[in-house]
Image (cartoon, rainbow, N blue to C red):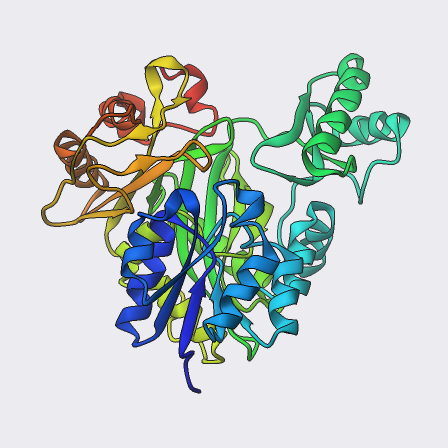
Length: 446
């Protein structure tokens, strides 16, 4: 089946540049869209064409469906790659692309809708035989129903917004006396953040690992997995470091989780690459958390240990080709540190401004995915991630040592970054031993 002739990248920063690189290698023309704040960005420079779609404010540029569709039409793009974030999991955007005969390189509107609603996704997974956290069947009706469900599930429980994400609209309740206050606060937060105050409830898993399975599915009903990533090092539900394979993983657990990931993909007839995220408790029992119907920030480490270009596979699957990979197992160890424009000495406060000096580390097994350079202005309008530093080595011990060396070489001046935080993390005894879970950052002293 013929591949696309021209792909518009509906995103910015390092992921836009990452997509452009693969498109060039595949002989596909590219269109970068940009806000006025990003006019000097590398994606704009290296794409074959570039179209300004609005001012710095995301709502008027990167989140403006009419502006992006107009850019695709005037450049005759026959496909749109949304990257991650912004409109990548937007059901309406996928549908509008479909209506304009532009291929959305991602999930179908139905798949996005089905997996975007947490309660609906859980019901689908239960029906497919994927292990799920014990919880309410559908949305909670009212406060008495919440108390009844919590008594049945047994405390501690966690209430979650059905339209939630990014750590918002979530609250742990440890005993019945706290339920009313938690119910009111979570509903109010959910309504303010998502315009939807619908809540559901789950058993709160103590000392969990956040381990996800990379999956891929084609238009012929085939699905496979590309093993796991451990994303347990988080701050306020935002991932800081990812690695594969997980130091907590066993061959038996990987096989079981991989099978569950494939079941999840087939349950929704998944098309493209995606990620099935699980919580894994201290007994190595795992539970479905959510399915991300897009490429992940941390897809890089999977690529490094499987020698598999996930962006290329996304494009080929969207063009109607069959899956070319199988159920792949990591042959090496990879770690990714997210380098953010934040000040770890001041509660990770954002640090926009101009980069006055920039030097990237190099050497065998070191990869940098970034869009910044000396003289680049970090805008306060967008996500603070400015770079992804990835290392690959034969063992986890060697990967940690390589990451320490690469961090020592990494020079970014003019703004504050999280490099010092990562340097300290790589020397932490518990991290080195692989003894951590999603609560690690609550006790980690920087």
